[in-house]
Structures are given as structure tokens and as C-alpha cells.
Image (cartoon, rainbow, N blue to C red; front, side, top):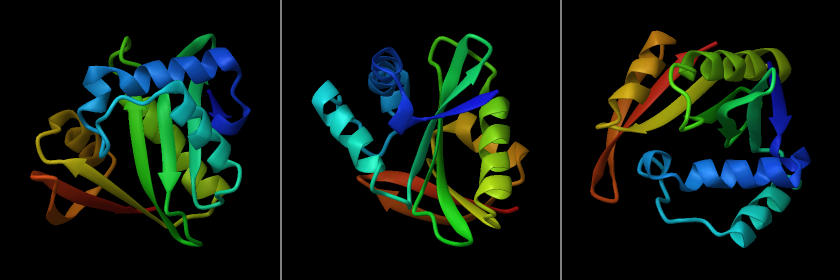
Length: 153
């Protein structure tokens, strides 16, 4: 399995990631649920080159792209994580999460991960709980309930 850094993706890979990000089944769980233009997408990718506190990856296994994982607000010890699967695949969440945790722990040497998920996103909550994330807080975000889950590595 390969973690392909967003800043090194080719034009086809960039277009694929944007297509996924704008997919209704993915977009509805994002903090910003608006459709993103290619121009916005490319500006975001460019900004990542100057942001050591953010890492975004496209996960590839063999010739298949499984999904996207990211770490944001990275400090010396912790980061917030994000994850979404290729909308055409099912059952890859565990692979994505395993790769992200391994990278966070082995490469970045982090000791703590934080996930924020909308309360109604049962699939995401189940995945986090399978990986020993524990609920630590509930807040409101744009009229929706947001759950914070955390895990020590």
C-alpha cells in the first residue's frame, strides 16, 4: 500500500480526488459541504507545500485508489485526522485507518490522534471505535452535533 502525497499527484490523480471530494456521499460529511472547483482544489494543493501542519494522501494498493487520509493541526505529539473512501468501493475503511495510524505513529512519531465526526455518521463512528477511539466531547457545528473522539498511539 502506498501513501501518495497530494503535492506530488499527477493531473489524473488530482481530478480523481476532486471528483471524490465533490461526491454527494462524501461531501455531506465534510465541514465545508459546498462543491469545490478545480481552481480551488489546485490552490489548496499548492498551499499544502507550505503547510508543515497538514499532510494529505491518496492511498493506492496495486492499481486501485482506495481513498484519502489526512492529518491536520499537526504538532509534535498530536494531529486531527480525516478519512474518506473511494465512493465506488466498500469495506476499505480499516485499510485507510491502519495506514493513517501507522504513518502518524511511525513517521511523524505522534502519540495522540483526534477525530471529529458528525453524530449521525454511524459508519465513521463505528470505524473510529473499532480502532479504540474514545468519545471525549460533543459540540454543535452549523446546527449539527459534532462528536470528538481521541486515541493514544
